[in-house]
Image 1 (spheres, rainbow, N blue to C red):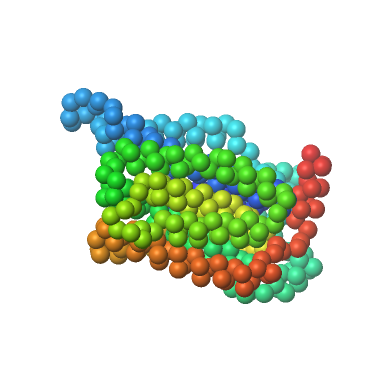
Image 2: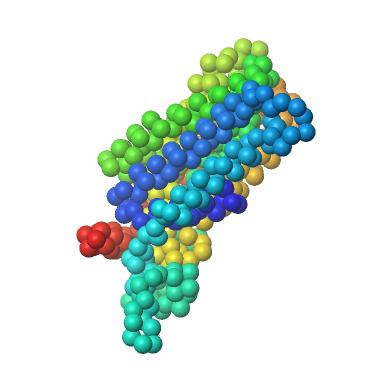
Length: 346
């Protein structure tokens, strides 16, 4: 993932090339692709564990085989990227990027990283950007970043604790837990297809609201209330619901973030994709720390101790969402008109 850079660039790509009407569906498709990778990883590890690698001391072993597989996959990706990827037209964001040479010729190739630093905004654009409030006072942006942190924290605690909890409660080995995590990822395909379809009928904030309701109910259900009577059905059912709820919420949440971030932030380094990626990275780090703290009290108490904390966090976040629900709306600008005129001119 390259320190998360690929994820942030992909989100920036979606925000720059899709209009607001289609952006939620595109974000849901991106989450689906990420879920496919999450499903393929544990499934691949489970398959490689059954391969006979022969004598010890060779370059291909159980420990090195995932690295060789990833080397092959990334090499194929790099080849397809070089051959087929084309930079999208971002003139609706950066303006006209044509460079006029001294001899009068017009150079059509865009150099966004360099030109965007030297290009001066128009007087009207500069005035509108100066009138924009600070980023920390933008309720939709700050709320979506917090909700993204919350959902990634819940997801990290679920996935990272699954091997330990399933081994303790159900005596699952790595192959069983890997297969379970792979099945979780595969469930995201039908879930995000539904999100993509619902995004054309409902607002992003409505989808976020109902996803959080599902997450809260699932966190209540996954907790062990009767020690010694915790079943596989209870864990698997509510773990599936938590996984679906958090991933289904990510698409509308990221879409609303890209729609509400100020225009001047869309051109800089601190764009919506970068902010979301850093928020998710922080959530994963905090999640790993919480798992370590919960495990220090014993694996028997880890399940309830971990997910009750997550439940309190989600309930607090839900109350914040309910308080600011009426302000969770997208920013009004001319981006969609610009994108529409670009697509019609092609």
